[in-house]
Image 1: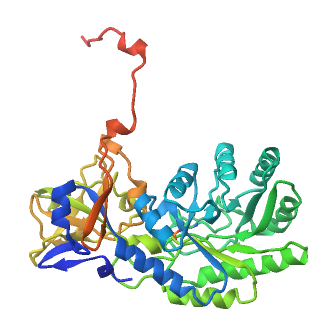
Image 2 (image 1 turned 45 degrees about the vertical axis):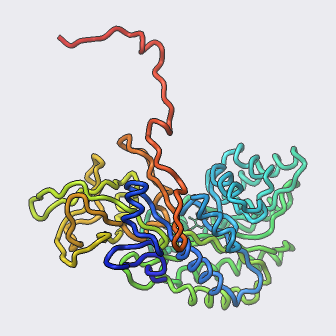
Length: 428
Ligand SMILES: *Cc1c(COP(=O)(O)O)cnc(C)c1O
């Protein structure tokens, strides 16, 4: 996907579709996430198009990449369901109008309360991470008088070859059941009342550009499907997870057409409904984080450009050493070598280290690009900073989809009465 689908320059000013980012900054302030509806639609359609050789499929957007109700509603309109990992994400998906049957519940730490919530809502598939989780779910469903449709998540022991913090399919990962134990666990779970086992789920990690590890994982799943069928299990669904990566440096993204062709080739004889859970691929390029330069201060080697967006607004650079391009909203054509840092009191609150960037001055607007996935969804109020605002642009329309909220308004706090009453203590 080219970034220009959503963001580009008009008369020297960066726009989201037809709306100037300077206009948005004036209206809403900074820092603010700005999403392009057109870029989201384009990526969603490109993904679906790439899977056109696959006869039976369902697409579920990984809500953790971007739980904005506006984003989820738009993707529902594109025929996407939701891949969720918490009760809060279930609420968001339902609120966005997604049908419960189009929701897949993944996640290694579902609480009994969350399982009950999912059962009552009628979630389409619950992806089991352990035998014990299946037992608890089966007992709960039997008690309520419902049947849960479930898949067993298997750990294929394949290294996705990406950053260690986003690799999920190696044998030492916490996700899924070990490949060697999957058959027996499946046998036992399929024999329980209260759950209808329909197949297997796999997800080996995120930001995967090279399709080879995915193919390796899917081939292992093919073996498992054949063995399960030989034991008499009717396998109707296989969830292939998400993970297709994007290029954050303006190069080529994971090749979605090659991915679709690979999946079609590997799964040709499976005779199942294939489920897909893309997150990053759909949303990453569809968002920028609009920020204002607070100060430009001298450094020992090159200056620090201090912006008003921090690691609490965009955690990926601090968390994964991720790179997001920094671009002035109204570039002069001149560049400088500088560090780009946020206001948070941590040295890891840094977006660029001695990089050649657009020359900016105090008060200028700039963006961090490609932050539509795992951007706002990871935002916090660290340093008691406000929770960042979000805007969606669609053509020449724009709307605030999440207002900026002061930290004090998010978590209402109280001081115990015994402390309030305590006498003041003065050091001598
Ligand atoms: C995070 C996650 C996804 C989405 O991953 P992307 O890399 O954003 O495509 C899909 N499925 C599961 C189970 C996940 O945990």
